[in-house]
Image (cartoon, rainbow, N blue to C red; front, top):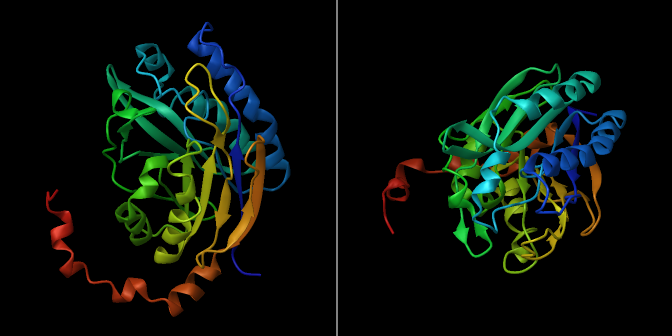
Length: 290
């Protein structure tokens, strides 16, 4: 049977699209919407679970409204404390994407990792920050400064890439070089320009680097911004680029897949990309060129 790890992804519609309500109320409603799926994941035997980008609230970056700075929290902090009991109860690793406040005026788009025993293992901060119509993220986030860490969890070596990061193969390769067996990409992306890339780029990362990927997108539309429909379609893909399971485009749900991590060794013995890569020839890539 091999080293089989049961992975889970939760895609969830934001339940409270009401700008007249306090940020704290909107966040509380988003958290509560996840609770049934957290319980379902635990009861289904999920060993490694990932939530969507900024899971406890809307994707507020279509605005440039300073009130959403109130959504930021310390990491570890309240969300990690609230989810740790689920990790312990079900011996489940949980990747928790939140809006992080490091200090006054310093904010990051972050994903924390809780191990199966409830221990906080660390965090990844989104490195690539877009600034384009509907995605004014530089208003809210500093670029990450923690590199591309890989977390040695109870079940697998896990890496995280967040949303816009997925357009950059360099970090995806570094996650593989750092030992990742499963890379999760929590996202918030709407139908339109980049939708056709959703099922191209990340399977390509999985193939080029010989690891599994779990890719999460939220669902629904969010007022008052209405930048488009978040089209769900979360999925797991294996190191050969095969889709293991795929979610719907319009429904909040948990999806689950079994990943045999021994496939990584099998695939890499055929496709020797790590053996044949030529880092000594790539120096120009690291230079500050246009």
